[in-house]
Length: 100
Image 1: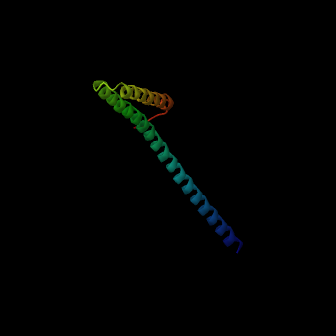
Image 2 (image 1 turned 180 degrees about the vertical axis):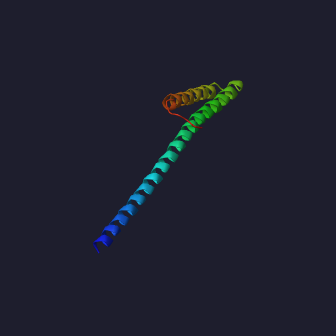
Image 3 (image 1 turned 120 degrees about the horizontal axis):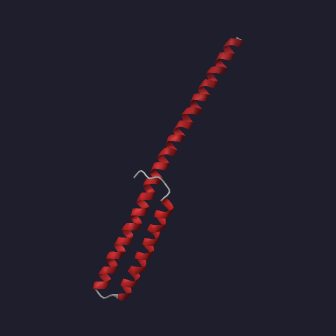
């Protein structure tokens, strides 16, 4: 009877150890995926800022050709803002290894 109880305890400990190991492995995989997603999001963010900067640059040029000085000034300010965002993202994300 004592041998049976000892074997049952050992099986239970092995089972608990396996379950905990599998949970830890799943957690590790989720974090690896999260890192990959964040790396891609950093690239997408920088590209979005660049895109917005270019779009406002086009609007600024269009306003210049139409002699709309107020629109041109506003668009120039937007270009400056989006350029600042882009540069800040490059600086902030620059030290992070990217896979995208």
